Length: 154
Image 1: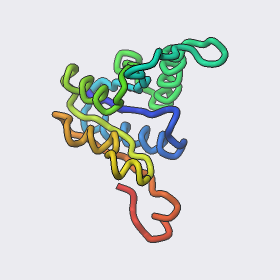
Image 2 (image 1 turned 45 degrees about the vertical axis):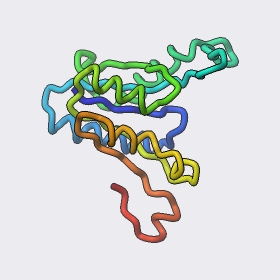
Image 3 (image 1 turned 60 degrees about the horizontal axis):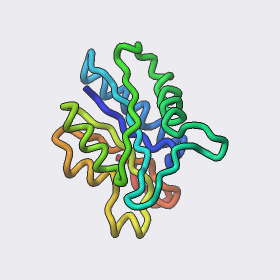
């Protein structure tokens, strides 16, 4: 099983497209593997969680639709795709738990640009790499200032 963890609300279209092309390459290395597309719906530790948007639409259902829309260009049959909206206060922990519980062979995660808060607290992708029991591919799209300095994407 291959899992791709997507932050559909916080990622750029360029990062989402890069994640899709990376998934295509990873799936060629794992012929016949299923792809689990996951996203995390953050929950609060203390406050009541909002389960609908401003228009009254269920957030979980909206995320499932977004996952299906993201995966459609891959052209995989429905028998090779699953979609999961995980819930938890810490996205990295939710992803790691999913990876462990489902005995995932390979995880693909995106890394957003650097920020001082992210450097201080650590990133979701770094935690997934550190704690996952499987191979993890991190996809990063260079920020404009990195392109100017000649830093390549990894």
